[in-house]
Length: 314
Length: 249
Image (cartoon, rainbow over all chains, first blue to last red; front, side):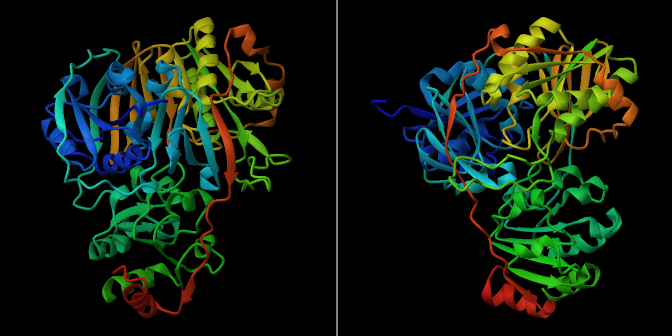
C-alpha cells in the first residue's frame, strides 16, 4: 500500500451522545494508520455526531440520519456502512452487542474475513485476539484488502473525548431493509455506571442463594463504592441476577480498577471476562476456589458476614 | 417449514486447552470434543419448534472433518431428522462456513436457520450474521426467546443493558444465546435411532465454494499469567490493603 488509506469507525451511540466503547475503538483505529473517520448512523443523532467531532484524533465525521437507524437494526446499519466502504482500508466496530451484530454482515458482503475482538494492533494487517475464552492469544494476519474488525474495548485506552475539531459531513441514508422491525425493549434504568465502563465492579455468584439475598447483600456494597453490579453465569442461570450482568467469555468482558467477586468460585469462563481487572478481590469460604488463583486479595470468609462488614467499613 | 441447524464440533467446554510449545496453536490432540454448546441450544430450539408443530423437518449441518459425523449423530439424537456433512480437512473460517451454508440454504430452502451465536473455540461470533448477509436474509442474533407465527419470528435478544424484541420476516437467521432453552439429555434409545437416520456427505467443491482461509495465524501464545496475590485475615485487613497498598478506594 503506497499511501495509508483511511480508517472508518462505526460509532456506538444513543443518538444524543457517544457510547464509551466508541472511544476505545477510535484508539485502535489510530493504530491502524491513516485518517480516522467516524460514522454516526442514527435518528436525530446530531448530538452524537457533534460529540464524535470533538474526539481527539478524528479527522471527519459522517452522519447518516433516518428513522431506519432509530434502533440500530443490523440490516440497515450494515447497508449504510457498505454504501461508504469503498473509501476505506479498515472498518472497525466496537465488540459490543450492536457491533458484533452488524460487522459480520459488512465483512461477508465485501467478501472479506472479519477479525473479531482484537486486543492489540501489531501492524495494519496483523492483530492479536483471544481464543478459547482467553486461554490462548492468537496473533493473526488478515490477507484481504479490506480489514473488518471488532475491537475488544478493554484492550485499548479511551481516546480523549475532547480536543478534536473534525468536520461533520451529512451523507445520504440508505433505505430501510423492510425485513426486520423493532417491537420494544426492556432496558433496566439505573444510576449505576455501565458494566463495561465501570471503574469498580461488585460481582456475585451462586453462593448468594436467591435474588433477594443478592440484592440485600451486594447492592449496598455497590452503592457504597459507586460500582456496577455483575454476576457469574451460575448466578444468572439461577435467576439471582439479570442476564446482562453476566461477566465472562460469553457475557461482558470487563477490566475495572477494582473487581470484587463474592461467592464466585471462578470457572475459566468467568475468569476470561474479568482477569484483566487491575485489582481483584475474592471473598469465598472455599479455600480451594479457583478465583483465589487470580485474586490480588483473597478473603476466606462467609460472604453473608464479610460483605456487609466490608460495606460498613468503607 | 424446514429448519436448518448448523452445528460445530469443538473442544469440550470443560477442557482447559494448552498452547503448543512451538506456539503454532493449541493442542487438541486426544482431548474430548463435543458439540458447541450454543449449537446444542439451537438444535434443541428447532426440535421444540417441531414438537409444537411449527417446523416439519429439522436438518442438522456440520462443516469439517469426518469426525463431525459424531456431532451430527448427537444432533439427530436430540431430534434432528437428517443431517448433512460438508466434509473437508481444510481449516474452515467463518466466511467459508457461511458460504457453504449459503449454498445449502439455496438447495434446501429452509424458512429458519438457527445456530449458536459463537463457537467456544475461536470465539468469532460471525457465522450467522455472515450467512444472513450472503443470503440476503434478516437476522436476530443472541436470542433468548423465539416465537414463530404467520411468516414472522418474534425474537427477544440479549443486548447490552437488557433485552430487545424484533419481528423478522421468514426466512431468517436466528443465533442463540445461553438462556434460550436448556437442551435435553439424549437418551440411549434416541442415540440408537439417530444411527439409522440419513446422513449425506458432500464436499465444498460439490457446492462450488472456495474455502481457502483468509486469515493466517502467525503464532499462538499463553495469555499473560496473573499470579495469585495474598490472603488477608479479615475485612479490616482487606480495607487497609485496598486503601493503602492498592490505593483503589
